Length: 66
Image 1 (tube, rainbow, N blue to C red):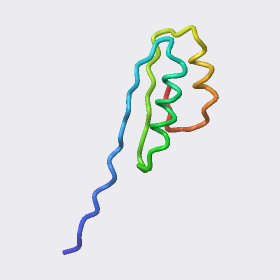
Image 2 (image 1 turned 120 degrees about the horizontal axis):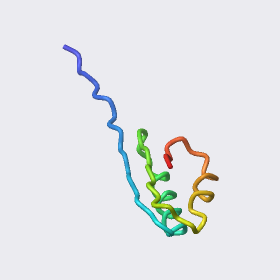
Image 3 (image 1 turned 90 degrees about the vertical axis):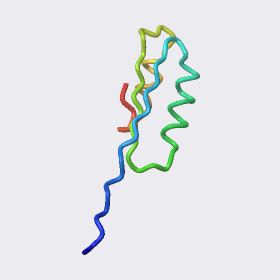
């Protein structure tokens, strides 16, 4: 019998943030630079007022969910 190839698992990273724009940008950069083929990064923002939303919106990567 042939070997069954298991699909690569989806890795999900969830990062909560509030007014930590520079920190969350470094975290996103680090996560998205990983070599895993199936990866998503979900950033949950609690109403930041420091430009976090606009900074994350400039990142054009479908693996980032904001």
